[in-house]
Image (cartoon, rainbow, N blue to C red; front, top):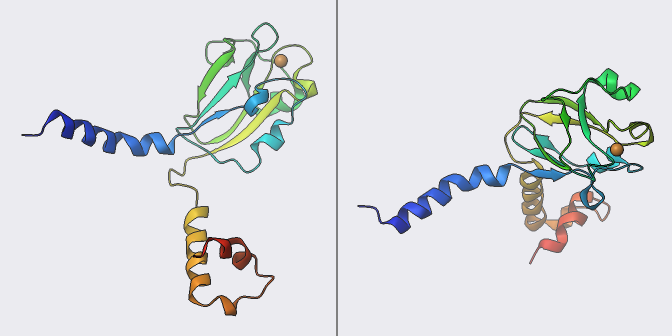
Length: 164
Ligand SMILES: [Cu+2]
């Protein structure tokens, strides 16, 4: 019969992969959700997947979050608020439930116009980012015969430091 300790270990093993795969993105990092921040720059290099969450952190006296469509996003047009499209707590966790483009703006007058707007593309690809496996392959190649690679080869330069 399985001991409680064994069951606990089993539970951790089963739960862990889903915990690792889901990412909570704090929008704007330490700047949070605010005016005069470049959110398109913030999204650069990030991959958003179904199951991840956005966390909007802001002063609720000054800001809020509206989920809008692409047209409203472009025009900074605030839609009528409903339970599904507006967030006002100052610490809003927004799960990314479906793939596709998602648009968010602040509903306070003028804030979207000065950059408080965020557009992301959510992928339904559940596999981890492809970069690690690609670099692992390149690393093996470097070990095999580094002399085949020229000095200017990006792969060689990127991974040669990891060789022991
Ligand atoms: Cu605002």
